Image 1 (cartoon, rainbow, N blue to C red):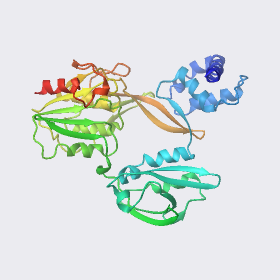
Image 2 (cartoon, helix red, strand yellow):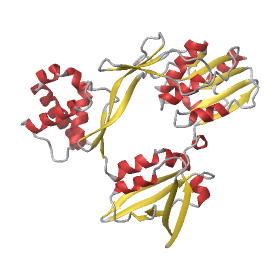
Image 3 (cartoon, rainbow, N blue to C red):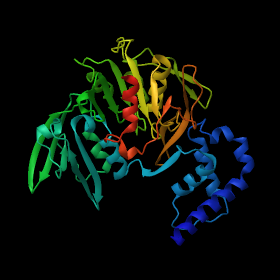
Image 4 (tube, rainbow, N blue to C red):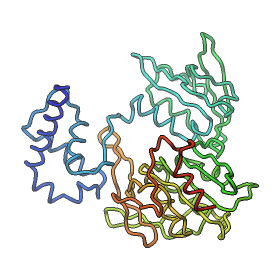
Length: 385
């Protein structure tokens, strides 16, 4: 523990020394350090590190110095990732978050053992395309599209990804035997997870755990063939996700107010929903939204829209307070996520760092969500009853 503390102190000392030694550079280029220009600030840091006389311990990675510097001048959402874009770790993440893996229902792990590329299937979702084709957890993928990948770089695993409906041909090694497996890549709404619903005494209760790809289609299905007197949207513990998906869901309930991205460069960009149908929820239907301290980002955007456009009652605890948005890029072989600006909705003031105050505050331990002691849910049902 002492060594870790000393190491952190060295990083911060070196970083502060560099910052003080280039104080004029920082203030002169303040906008650049706020990522008005996506990469120049990081290049400035790198040049400063190369030219400084401050020595760094051998066990301190460049990425640690980048992030220590950003901890002084950046924000909580701007980080350099210790992940080379060609590394096994990065490729694993890239494939597993792709529409192919999500839609077809599988996950892999990419690793290299000396000159061998090891691509192993780690998870297969029951009933989804990969499972129906016979893919199993534990299978080692040795060929993709007929091409042997065992002697390739980790980037070869990217060939697993592809467009909806295109054929994915795999040869896997399973218990010493080779198996050929083929299926059409699936990226449809049935791949979505994180939405559930039920009717509770005339209230249509829909819990949204995340705003992920295709979830808007699954969200729309929750209304099919159901008769209800009021609507309750549960966004507790929902830390956000795809803002476009949140807008699509909100557009199924109400007409959207203006949603604008304000970039640090001064540029603005209006966002619109991809939904081209009118609201499927009658205007006379009462709406309530459940939120808590972890309701953030896209979940807060949906909360604001339903409150301001449909007069929804907000029940629970003040939300997290994140209206900033981030973008991803690459710098010197590393990936970087940086804050580009913030979102404004209608005439509502920016709630970044402040959160959204509920109309009816109900304090509760989040561990009680979904239990008999869920007093926030009980209160929401009460006001809708």
